[in-house]
Length: 226
Ligand code: SAH
View 1 (cartoon, helix red, strand yellow):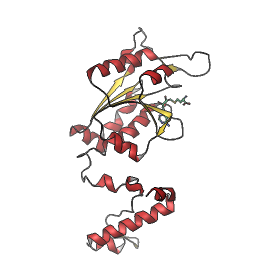
View 2 (cartoon, helix red, strand yellow; view 1 turned 135 degrees about the horizontal axis):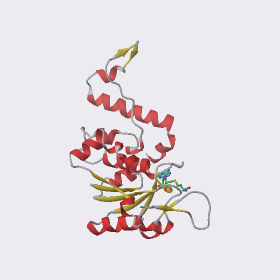
View 3 (cartoon, protein in one colour; view 1 turned 30 degrees about the vertical axis):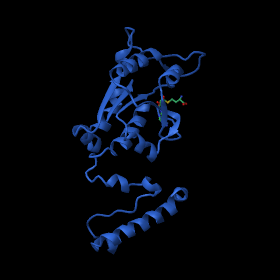
């Protein structure tokens, strides 16, 4: 999978892809992530990428020309399955959406900044708008990193134990069961005996029961779907 991310603050995107699972995914060639500085496509000598909004009011708006120039150059080289704009008014990101995008080959993700992007970019280029929650961030970069993390960890061969993504919360509309590691006892707090029993079918049964219990307690609305 290849993901091209367009941003006016590309530095914000360096760290999320340089560590842990996302780093490994890139090193193994499972995910290629390219971060593009929209400023490189600005045509004027000051490399301006934002301007005051028509009609007045506070804040700046990301200009149409540099974003379109960047998108058209990238689009001339490959076909994108989706051109995504991270936006608080987009569709809420969830696990089925992450699963869906993990099957794609080429994604382009545009991060907004300031008051947002010139509406004409949304009308003529964007094929999907995604929000990571009902709150406003100062830029789309952190949202894009969240989206890419949720997608890339699902790619085959990225997680060490390939089945582990399937046992995470929200797959099957169930929350994940509790997990423990050594020591078996800490300050008198014991790990449930069943997990030390070595009886795999019983452990699986226990985990399923705990997943149901936890979902019933914390997110009962998921069980209606289950
Ligand atoms: N004025 C806009 C918010 C702009 S915030 C509004 O009220 O809708 C600046 C940028 O941050 C946006 O262009 C978007 O790319 C990003 N952003 C902010 N909140 C986000 C969220 N919840 N999910 C995804 N992207 C978000």
